[in-house]
View 1 (cartoon, rainbow, N blue to C red):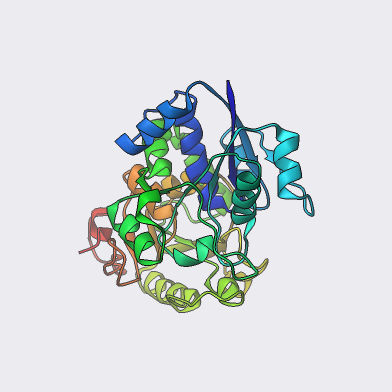
View 2 (cartoon, one colour):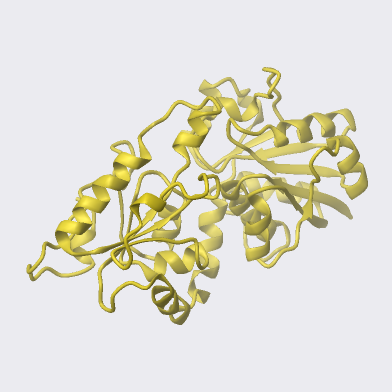
Length: 328
């Protein structure tokens, strides 16, 4: 039986890997023919979850204890220590090249390797190492055809491209019914928002931090947050800011003004989405989670499919909620 490593460094990638874990362990069907065929080609497998940094907590929230790649440990030595036969990874952003180093180590050891993309941002940089070189694994699984086209445009060889589907979304559909409404209600108490208040959840995004490492900003997260805060203040709503794992500690503290503006990482992200009345942000994974849970979501980024006005009911207006928050 093959030992297959599922590795991620970033939280978003770990979500995708958790979905792949469910596919390879038979808990969930593969969402695409490409992935079904790939899984069948592996045969019976022993799955080894692996991670570092932000991904470790995601694996643990999924009930899976990962093998942690220690800082400074050579990739080839770590793979040999794990005794794996196949290396499957998520991809990182411009601030990390852990997956590239694992693909290189796998190739040197004669092990097959594949990558699963979780987000359309910075597609070309996901294969570039810190020395400027480019490494492609044997297979690159895109979420959909549009992402596959974007990857090909960035230089990924067409023969390596496959469609894997949105594994995180598929997993959410499978386990979303188990998200506890009681836990979500308890989270509102933890936030300290006023009883009966309209709660807007703003997911932080580490644009400023990523720009410092070379990414080109698509938007200004502070300007977007301030727009949400102004709209919420006019409507008498509360805003809960949920920092991104890569956000600098204390990044949003200057905006905190409980109980109307709360900064909190309490609770699982699914419970946070369920506890809020609407998710309003830019291009966060929480939009995927909101969709899977049937919660309203609005993006302030014009290129996002959920872009639209944040139509919060004004003070004193008799408007239905949350239907009034559905983007136009």
